Amino acid sequence: MTGAGINRQDEFAALIDQYAGEDGVHATAIPRVFLIRCSQPSEPIHALHEPALCIVAQGRKQVMLGETIYLYDRAQYLVVSVDLPIVGQVIEATPEAPYLCLRLDLDPAMLGALMLDSGLGDVESLRPGQRRGLGLVLSHVTPELLDAAVRLLRLLAAPRDISVLAPLAEREILYRLLIDDQNSRLRQIALADSKLNQINRAIGWIKRNYREPFRIDAVASEARMSPSALHHHFKAVTAMSPLQYQKQLRLQEARRLILGRSMDAAMAGYSVGYESPSQFSREYSRLFGAPPLRDIARLRAVPDLVLDA
Image 1 (cartoon, rainbow, N blue to C red):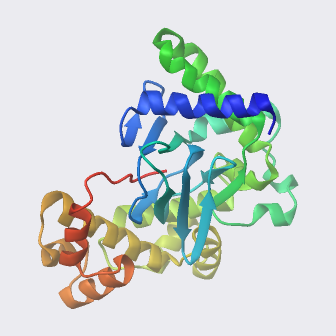
Image 2 (cartoon, rainbow, N blue to C red; image 1 turned 60 degrees about the vertical axis):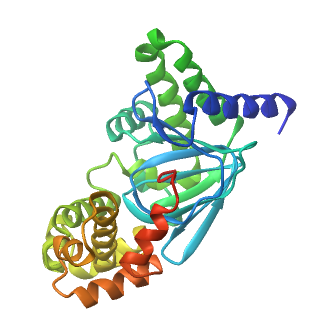
């Protein structure tokens, strides 16, 4: 990276540090823009990561999806194109050089309009290999993408300009993502007839009905796919089966109820659809590495958890 690029990278980190202020995930005056700061390595955090772009300015993080671990720092950005249950962990951060990250939640309407205007809307014109892959991708940060991100954050110092200029900077950021060959799935977010949107419909059904007994025929009907096609494409995008996805949602929600509402483990398990406390405890321990009481005690001993990005 050139000297100018290094200066821009330093400015990017300084802007995030300035407007984040303290550790945590912070909303900003710019719609869909969040700033993340963490001054020490974090515990592994299970979360449902919604569609978003994450650009690291400082530090390093790893994300696990299924059995695969993705490592990224300021040289790479992360794009998530569907709701994915992931395990995230900040692995490089100190009080002097905290982990700093910009998260931009993706707006399907803006993506769709941009694709129409730019002629990037024809997913079928992509090579077959470009149309496959997970709903998570890492790609290299370009000087053009970094420049647009910096200009977006500079607007935090000029609130009057945000409503007019922020959409322009966001539009440029999305354009830089769309022209990256690794982001072919991102183009499908705005296309109603794409396989990705069919999987999104299936995900939506599971999220609405995760407490109920799993019915693959109902999920397949919602996705407008056969059960076998749903299973194949769902796993290709999320790295797990629809049933495994439902279990992740159930267990993450149960953990939230125990941690945030001080609900006992048996009641939390029942609330998310488990009829057997022993089965709930087994599956909870398998996902989080410890039974509910011990896991929650460990989490409560960590005062500031960075949950996203």
